[in-house]
Length: 327
Length: 224
Image 1 (spheres, rainbow over the protein chains, first blue to last red):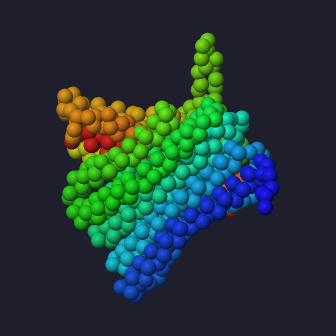
Image 2 (cartoon, each protein chain N blue to C red):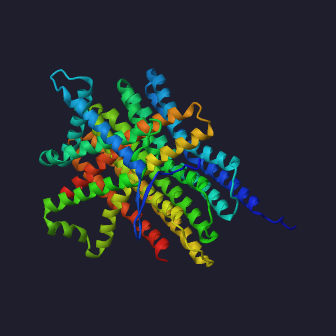
Image 3 (cartoon, rainbow over the protein chains, first blue to last red):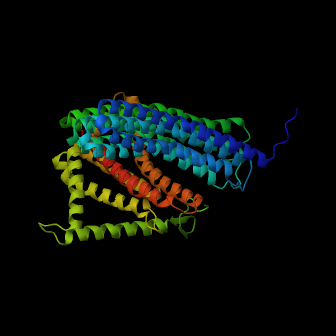
């Protein structure tokens, strides 16, 4: 059997279909897991405090709706990939469509799981402190919304990959650079999204434990989440360099593989620091709520610990930059 | 859709090279300055024991931010740096909110604004560090725990500028791109106002606060 010859139009369609499948397929993992966690905590909460079942269910549904947004981003990208009119079919466009799908698919995993954690913990928190359910829900909303940042970064890179005009660039190594760009932001978002969720979860518990510490707990949570997101910010930076830098034409395979590896390195290298920083933030937030008088010291320890854990992401960034600019 | 990420620029050709000025960003930053000054004027114009609504908002903002700065930096340093922190927050808040008005765009959407503010915070933090610890101790802190880790410590410090500015830029730019694309896909029906509330008001406020707090934190890390 011989395969029919593949022209540019077909190649672009193939890439768009695979990209769409990957975007929605991987994108469904995180949100579904996170929502399931939320529902399980909500069951526990209702079992502990039956009278406030209404508040708990309402809080659960609001939290799940926000966890869902990561997979809604994936759905938007997948639909765009399937139905978008491509004006400039070709191998570079095909690579950019595939990269957009990879980026959004991986990028939605972390934020989906992460956003489920504060949503679930806040249900439990309401069961323990029904009197301040409004404040707990607000705190949960802030936490889950900040968890979405890595997914938003992934969506931005995916949209830029979809809509940026290809122009006349060298097909190689630009194709590899674009796929690297997608992997960089997409993979790095996994750790950051989940890490941010851990910090937010601890803050919901903390608010319920000591309602009068809300301001400090929320501030610590926001700073902790922001630092947890640093690996995904590095991923975004590497993606932007890979997308917007024009690379000289090169027929050697090593030039292409180098750029692809740059994205892969930053993406994989960002997963661990994101989760680690989230753990540091979770611990700090939890203990700030219990010992508010030590808040300053706890925040400082969190930042120093996160900086050390972050250094691995910085090593990954250095290697990526070397792969892009030196090798 | 082709306008994605487009900025109006003024190109001044000089012999040898071209000077690029982002006109749009300059005009928008000017508008932010005007709004911030108007707010400050309205808040401080009729100071009274019975405050007006604008004065209350101003007082809440300043008290809260002053309190947060004092917590992180201590009483004496807070007196010096809290005005800067308040100004930074108000500037960022108005900048991030500007995009919800039609025909106006957030100055923070252009990387130049967050990057310059990030460098500003970085320079101040290190100035405080040198002033507080003395030049020798300050330099020595880069050679810890082992002397050959110096390059990585320096890169780690520089990475702070990258992370703080790209976080703000990515969030605001991302919101703007998502609003543009969704508005285009839904023919501007129903969804865009809600997205504006989420990305403009909510995410904008949170990111302005995060940027401000991180600047405070960077200063406080240098103090110890």
